[in-house]
Image (cartoon, rainbow over all chains, first blue to last red):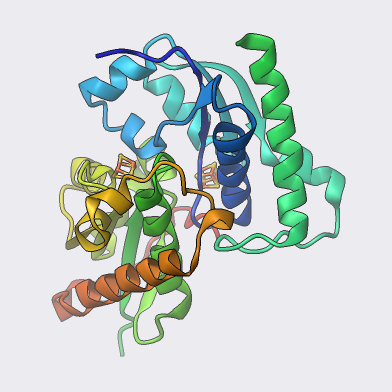
Length: 132
Length: 149
Ligand code: SF4
Ligand code: SF4
């Protein structure tokens, strides 16, 4: 099996919070649109299964995790699976600068929600370019 | 009358369209289902969580919703809670070719045809809920983080 040495960008995709969706959309913007040659994602739920295929994929991989709340599920699960977390992005750090805005729902983001997505994705892109 | 509460755990996979559909169909049922109270938990929180989170599926009758036949949500639930009351494999409903599409994953990339898939999968989740044994959801409480409460 050929292993990719792309940076893994892994969001929590939390289903109950709007910031879980922000994390997901930001990570996906990075891997689909901004840096598809240097970065990819791996399903977080697959990572935790511990299947041999995904274990091999994660082993010694540089990962950027994106989490929607202080529980930091993506970061914790990636570390448990043997990935090397080179940066932990916290959606709340970016949201602080947008006080009073409405970001949408865990189902669909508003325009302000997508603004935060853009900012976080740009930050992830910068990190990827530094390390890859 | 006892409140009927059902847990739905979606894989929300990030690599393919099936994961996105699993997430959106689950959200649709959580938001729109009126007959039964539905509740969810972020799957990664469940996986990384403590005893209380992992108790989720023993407290609520739980249905897993997975984007592809790797069935990550189903397997995690069985691993930590020991049982699952129903499971949905999105790829069986929308076809493997659609489920494993790695180009269309973001909400903004979805077209009408994809929202029809969401509706179809949500319909299957509702069917799975209506197949549950009625005595499986009476009078139970759960104090773990519902991630969104
Ligand atoms: S970090 Fe928070 S929002 Fe994300 S999956 Fe965990 S509990 Fe949910
Ligand atoms: S079931 Fe498939 S789509 Fe869902 S997390 Fe697992 S590998 Fe990803």
